[in-house]
Image (cartoon, rainbow, N blue to C red; front, side, top):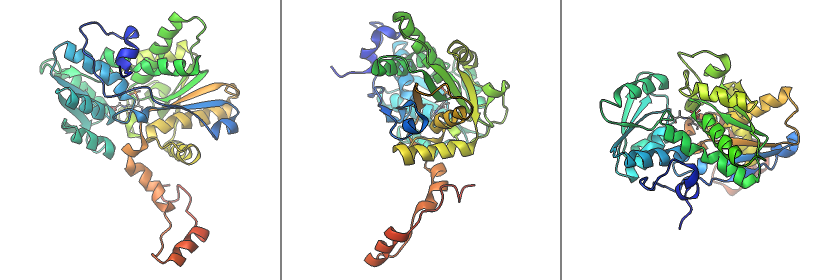
Length: 360
Ligand code: F0G
């Protein structure tokens, strides 16, 4: 039998004999030990590569569960609002299980790769003049009358499925990490990790909570600034959210795990994205790089992470958002003729310009 999240963690998930197995091969993503950063910061860093999921983001962990339950409950249409990844994931599972998938996205605000995914999987795409928060409000209002199953993280089964991220980390490390840094948008994922660690802790009293550190983008930071942001802005479009649906559970997660919310600038996010690619060989999307950006900020004023086990949740693959990376990476290309001598000279003397010269 192929190992799936559905069968491997069945006893910890809301799965009954009536729940059909849904899978696209999600989960069991690599937990990669850092090669360069651990040494520099004198701690044990691990990257959870959630971009290795079938639709290239962590959303698939919750989607398999939400879609299993939608089918169990005889729904044949699913709907979500999305900054991109939820729509790609929903569209993939919808296509595979013959569900009509409707995605509501903020016009011009989702990364190209994610939009192409939703198109490729055949979702009905509705692009609104408005932001994610407005899209989610609309989804809440229309889903009942149109008999649509919401597969945003306000669907409790999404949060249940995403707990598997915490299970895998503990299973693989053989203990809990001491810290976990992760991006926060609608605050579903941090809530899921909290629920997942809590559930494992209740079964094994040797486990402790990792301190959950939730990272938001500077001008999209309602949980850090403790107020709703009506017009959130950030280059990390996945977390451009001003009124997170799971705020209260996320707050509980931070309080119970002695964690905190931190905010980072777009520049810090892009520097972290570039650092991860150039020093660890991991290309994640900007929102995911906020994890590292947050750690670098944390490390400026705290030293309690030294010697500790730290996990960064890298939530999505960098190829989803080529446009942002291209803006600062294109200057790295050394151009020359096809003459062997010129190519040879270019290798010896050609210098790539600084990462950010073009962008900032
Ligand atoms: N990282 C990525 C790559 C995301 O796509 C998201 C959310 C987050 C982090 C934040 O997770 O919302 O659970 O706090 N993306 C959603 C979407 C909102 O529509 O794809 P969260």
